[in-house]
Image (cartoon, rainbow, N blue to C red):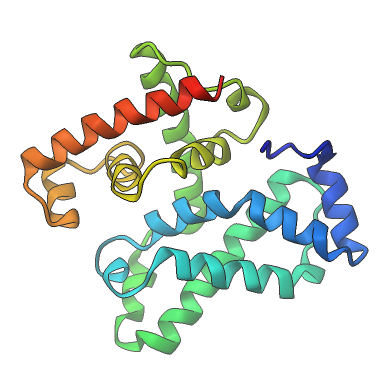
Length: 210
């Protein structure tokens, strides 16, 4: 499924239809970016916060809020919609912390702003795709037609959770194997082997998508 189109319907057209009250178009738009939001939520909920909140729950709250508040969106393009979704996600995160983790709300204030995370994700997607190309596996042609980070998120979503997590932690967040081992509660050697298997599996996903 391409971000730039959905069954032949472009993002701008879906946005226009959703603005006219077409619920199906709104639902299609949100589903198109679920994987992207999940990667952002996974990165944003690093450290202590992730032990207390599930990224999938945060994404679900974000999608519900986006559906409810879509009338507030003033853009008409995919980049504008992505920027708005990122802001909705961060608003939902702050609300959840206020409600459930009042004692930990300072953790959110100390963390990196969502737009910096998004920019870092875009850069990481580019460098990661280059790394795969150097290893003899160019990502699918969709990378050239779509928001690179969105395409990467959709491909990562095809992996099982521990493969996806180790790639996100290593390649997108840039953590050391020792830091990942602590985060995933595994041995450093086991994490290295998991990462190698995850990269091999991701290469298979790339080839299948060509």
